[in-house]
View 1 (tube, rainbow, N blue to C red):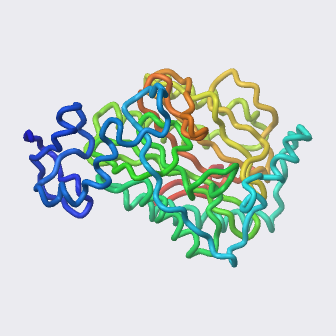
View 2: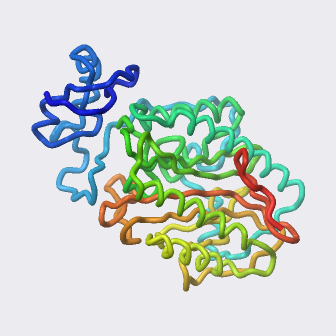
View 3: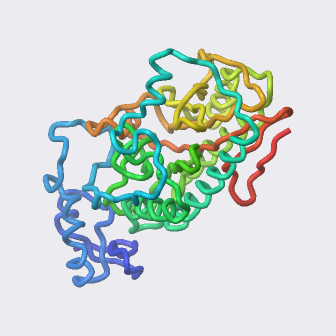
Length: 362
């Protein structure tokens, strides 16, 4: 085993580590491969060995675009019967959304004051859950552990984790690491120093959904990674500052792409913001790039998300064979931030704003 300046790969241990797993060393692997002692190495072996070539390969022959690989999922979680559920909870089929889609409906609902209060409440709860998950992000923690926090914190609030069984999605939130643009399935891979980790949380409560996400830095992240995360956050803020009645939805994309390009980065085109409320996803569609064909004009009472995904390299994505995990085509990193907004008579209200964030734009 060779020396390296890092922290022990065992979650419970924060000692300096100078011993590397010999299999990892042979294969040129560094992620989570250093340990402070043989005891810690042995304690982690059952999960650590899964990162070794050939030990876990659910998609034989698939050509990955970057360094990230899938890891096994943790145990399936359960939801108590007394938690109110959306229409897809049992079947995985979002009937209300699909009925609307099949009708090619593009009318953007004007949300009345009673429903606005419901959405404010669920968005506040979703913010609390995301903050709880975000506080746990550090080297050694796994995506599955983050998912468990989201699951339990959601249930504590009497809410349903909206992603769970939505079109068959197997977990309670999305955890997207490094080159994963979005929809990463939380698994047992430990986060390592330098990772970018996006956590996407949506709650269903009192008949409505609330949605937000943020990207977190794990340990010491390089300057480019920090710049990427700052750029994605600022892209969202700039777009929000333009939200007010009378503005075409397609305009928001030009605001986002202009700033991303100034930073030297690129905007993902195949995923967009969306209407939210009684439906998890509904009209309007809110693209994040310029020269898009978004339909509709922003009106008071509209509720929707903006969630720009910003890439270091090319904007195109590749889907893993799990049919969920979208990664960058060149394996370079991606970062994202998301808020749910309510349009007011003069601007908008950021329903998922965190502590210290501006929540009212006029």
